[in-house]
Each structure stands twice: as structure tokens, then as C-alpha cells.
Figure (spheres, rainbow, N blue to C red):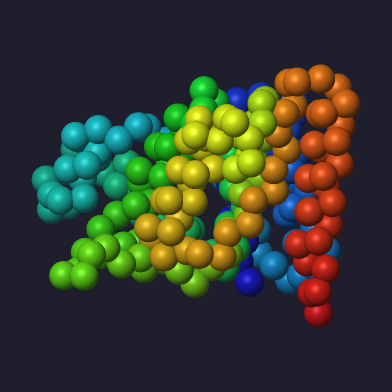
Length: 206
């Protein structure tokens, strides 16, 4: 089993999404000691945002690439190989301004590649990466759950679910801590709730 662990928060050890994603990974390792973990910190080593020059690297012949395109093409290939080979993806994804961190969006733009993670057919797009489970470690300052008045402002979890569904992934679990900036009582309850759901993830593991 391979587990790809990705963090994207800019807050380092103060990040709740990082704390949650790490707790998820530790839970998984305890249940499956032989799991192989690949870790990427998109804040420490942020990928370049998609540009015309980088996009052309996937179209041109290798001999036509400049040094930047060769470097970025190799990185994109590595991202895609890690993503496709993983049985489990643990995604640390805080909400920033109602959406995801830009460095996480940059990673998404590198792994959504026609012919590799999805394809177009006469019946519409078909995902090619559906054979995996995804656990999103989500943190939000306010409350944006489906039952809340703020749900329509959520372009973080809803966006990630859309992207994952697009590449064929339907086994998605969200570990959520929200309302973190409302007050200490709400924050404490949110963290307790998130930890409870983390503990349930591998409850039936052999």
C-alpha cells in the first residue's frame, strides 16, 4: 500500500490542517505498518503556477524544451506518478479566502492531465485515477458545512470534491475542523470532533 501525504498550509506547526493530516497518517501507519508514505510539503517546495511555457512542455518534443521546461516537465511527471501510484491520498487543505491555497491549486493543475488522469469521450469526460481513497484534512475559520448559511461560500471542500470526482475518485472522506476562529469553545469542540473521526478511519482494519 502506498500513501501520498500532501500539506499545503503556510502556517507551519501552527497549522490545524497539518496537525489533522499528520494524525490521519499516523492512524493509517498504526493500522497498516507496511504502508509506504510519500510526503510533499507544497509550502516548503511550492510548484510553479501553470504558465504557457510550462504547458507547452507537455506538447513539444524533448529536444525542443528549454531548461525550465525540462525541469518543470520532470516535476509534473513526478507529481502524476506519485498521484497515480498511491492507494491513499491524505490532503491537508485549509480554507484561504473561501478556497484552497494557491500552491495546492498549482499541484492540482499539474496532475489534471488529459490522457493521464482523465480522458474525453463522446459520452463526456472519464476519470482515470479512481482506484484510490482520499482523506481531506480540512480546516476553516468559520462554519461552512452544508447545513450552515455560509455553505454557498465554500469553494474549498466543494472544489476538491469536484476535482477528485472528475478524475474518477468517489471514495472521499473529509476530516473537518471548522469554526476555529469563532471562539475557544467552538475551536476545542471542532478539534475533538475531528480527532474522533480520525480515530474511526481504520477502526475495522485487519
